[in-house]
Each structure stands twice: as structure tokens, then as C-alpha cells.
Amino acid sequence: MMGTQLEAAAGGLITAAMKAAARAEGVSAEAVRRQVESGRAVIPCNPAHKNLRPAVVGRAFRTKVNANIGRSPEVSSARGEMRKLLAALEAGADTVMDLSVGAGLGRIRRRIIAGCPVPVGTVPIYEAFCRADGRIERLDSQLILDVIAEQAEEGVDFMTLHAGVLRRMLPLAMRRKLGIVSRGGAIIARWMCRFGRENPLYERWGDVLEICRRHDVTVSLGDGLRPGCQADASDAAQFAELETLGELVRISRRAGVQAMVEGPGHIPFDQIEMNIRREQKICSGAPFYVLGPVVTDVAPGYDHISAAIGATAAAFYGASLLCYVTPSEHLGLPTAEEVRTGVVAFRIAAHAADIALGIPGARQRDDAMAEARMKMDWRAQFRLALDGRMAAGRFRKSGRSIPEGSDHCTMCGRDFCAVRASREMRRRAK
Image (tube, rainbow, N blue to C red; front, side, top):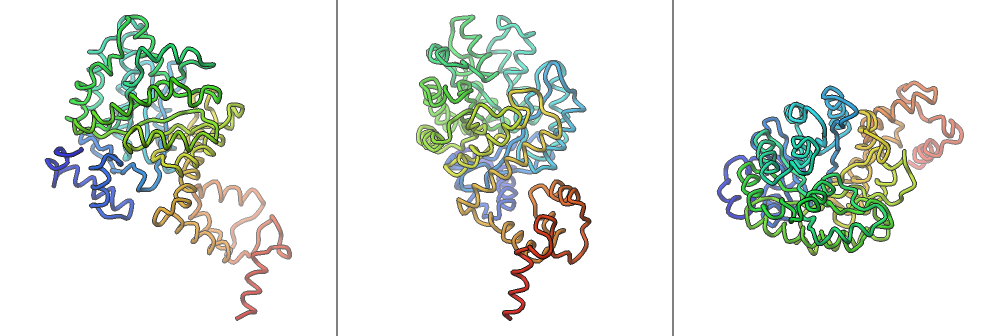
């Protein structure tokens, strides 16, 4: 969707996607076009994804939130993952990734694509490894390419591809406390160790791009050597891979394929700005898609909070797409309710960053909330809340119904309510 490909698509699907994305952002289609042509924004939009509502991912626009769903070999089912999809969409996820592993992957993925109006992403190496029966010696580059092609034909909008993990980087990763924590990165690393050869995705990147260009699949360059703990953050392995990702961004753009770059997982808060700035420079401004980042390693059960803290900083300094973290991170596969909790936590993080950045219209909802609170208009407050269901439910837990004209809550009571007092003083001053 870059350069000549954009020009060739004028008046067709891509132009329509730009217009739809522009309407959703409240900006001109020309503004979207300029950002996409420059590579600073992407619109994941596979023509085979028939019910897609296009969205633009880029720093000039509202920060987006991704929700990961997908079964494991031990837990969940297609029905369970569809419940998670519904929870993610109801909570406001902008994109969804199917990270399923195990049996029946194609069936689950096709159901997700058919039922999902937002862009859908996958990690093809998972299915390739499953087709190889979990045996590295049965995995080869042609199998990986076949899976990429099949998923593209089905309508996958963006794909995480761990093409930047190279053989020379593996000794650096083995010095870490936690080694390689990316599933895809670990599969590629094991393959290179087993055969003594270079990353097959890197070696056949031209073939990968031909498939992606043909189906308008956006490349999401996976961070296979992302740090998995605070001690491993910003190390030589992470930044060696980042240099290669910058190279792959430039190759992808020349081939007419949209590209974004995935970012680090566990990063101390004071290193977030440096990491974002470094990615922007090395990867020529490609949209940055970050997992969290998680800013402390000691909050299992609350990692959605730890990660949301890092996510606001990441978005403020330049990340465009935030991959959510749920309360079950590091503990197990999330439930549908935990998916919902993770999406809401990251929508809060994204919204806070957009306000701080002055994204047009970002604070409009907050100003409306302030007015509703001054009026004690409870229904308006629940409607404006990022999670109105939670807000209304918590209000009722205080033992209150929602009567029209109620002028206080149970926090302060009637006589100690400062907002009620302010309203009274305002009336007297008129």
C-alpha cells in the first residue's frame, strides 16, 4: 500500500479504506493518505476480510488498543474464544489477534475473521509449528510460506513475523536471566540451532512480501528477542534485533507492503522514552506496536495495571498501537472477563496519552463527563464512562438506585458533597 501500489489502488478498496478510517478519526482522507504513503501509518485491510471496519494505526491519530485471544493446547475451545472476541469488541478493542495454538486452528481463525469487524492479526509460525507436529526437524521455510499464504487468502489483515531474530544474536539472548520469552522467537531460534542455518523468514523475506503485497496484508515485525523481565531490558540482544527490523521495514516499503514494528515487553519506566525514540529513528518512523510495556515483574494478577502504566508512557512518547495485558498474564490463559478487563485498562492508558498529546477531540468526552458530574446526571456519566457497565454496577453496590435529580452519592453524603455545594454557590452568585 506504499508508493506505486497506492497509486494503482486509487479509487479502489484502499482509497475506500482510507476514507472510512478518516471518518472514524474525524480527519481528512488526504491526511490519512499522507501518513500511510510516508510509512508513518498503516491501515491493515485485507480485501478477503469482508465485514472489516478499517482503522488507521499511526502516531498522528488516536492511539489504538489490541486484544489477544486464542486457545492453548490445554484450555478453551472455539466457542470460548468467540466469547472472548465478543468481550474484546464490546470493551472497545481496535484490533484483535488470534494467538491460538494446538488443534483446529484454521476453524477457529475463520470463525474469528467472519465475526470480527476490526482488523485481525495472527502469528503464522504457530500454525506452521503445529502442522509440523511440534517437531522442529519437520519445520521448513516452504511450510511457513504455505501457512502465510493460506492465512492471507482467508482474510488475515496483519501478521506478526519474527524475521529479525538472526543466528548471531542467539548468544546474546542466552546471557539473559529469562532468555527468549517470545513463543515465535523461540521457535525460530530452535530451528536455527537445530539446522545451523539463518532465520528462514529473513532469508525468504522477498517471498513473504510478495504474498503480503498480493493480499494487502500488513507486516507486523515481531520482537522475538523482547525482554521478559526488568533485568533483560534494553540489552544488546533486543537492540541487535531492532536494527534488523529497521532494515526489514525499508525493504517492505520498497516492495509496497505496509509495515509496523513490535516493541519490548518488560521495560523499567525510566527506559520507555529512550526505547520509543530509538525505534522511531532506526525504523524510519514506522508505527510502533508495544506489549505494555510491563514496568515491574512482581505484580502477577495485576499485570494489566503494571502494563497500563507503561502503556500510557509508551503512547505519549510515540507508540501507535498498544497490545493489552490481562490480569492472567504470566499465570494462564485469560477468561472472557479478564479479556474485557485488559481492554478497558488499556483504553484508559491510550486515552490518557491522547489527552496529553492533544489529539483532536480526545478531551471532549472528559469535558462532557465533568458537566455530567456537576449536574449529578448519573445516566450521562455511565454513558460517557469507558466502562459504563462497571460504573453503573459499582454505583448500585453502594445501595443506591439511579433516581432522576439525585444530588449526591454515598461517598460524602448530602451535607458534605463539595459538588453539591459548588452548584448551590453558583446559583446564589447569579
